[in-house]
Length: 289
Image (cartoon, rainbow, N blue to C red; front, side):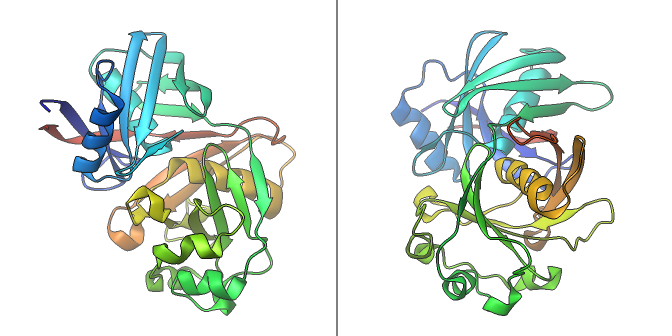
């Protein structure tokens, strides 16, 4: 194909940590089929394809190895860091066009590049399925799910099922049977599953999570998830620690698979306003496919 691809590890300052994403910073001449072939060849949870008409008009498309998705947090962070490093965008405010809508992006370049990404407004749906079956597809027992908090499908860009877990120790035991996800997720059978808990490895984090992909995506686990972290931030404000003003929380993920990283989430008091996630990325490799 002779297509240049950058590999960025998002939500980390260290190569080999965080969440890897492929980034094609000049994809305006690629067909849908070529984009899908690149994503399949790379095999990452998402690969981002940047189409620029000008510095102020940026479109990003996102592909899993099997299909296109409307939005991806970590691939957006990776793409924007790449555009800054290659001199294609500057510090300040800009917007990106995605299939999920037009989103505000904040770029800071002091000391290290930091990207803020405003997500879509919070939506949720009740999980009506079997808790026993849900626990089973995660490789857990139903008494490991923390019933003091509700199980909810949440969307700030993509639908995921947020599942509260009682103890951090249970995360190491998770063995997802992703093929069975659609049978359990009857309301939204293409959703991913995002178990979380309030016990963390680091004292400066408020939540810990893992993210298991929909079987339709062609991957198993996302190391550090931007869109789901935004959803977690909104859930935290609504169900865990409501605050009368804007609050900022830090979420850790990826520890169990050796790719730990962190997402900062700024959550408005009023969830009719969008959450914003913050993170950085580091280039770990360049490939030509």
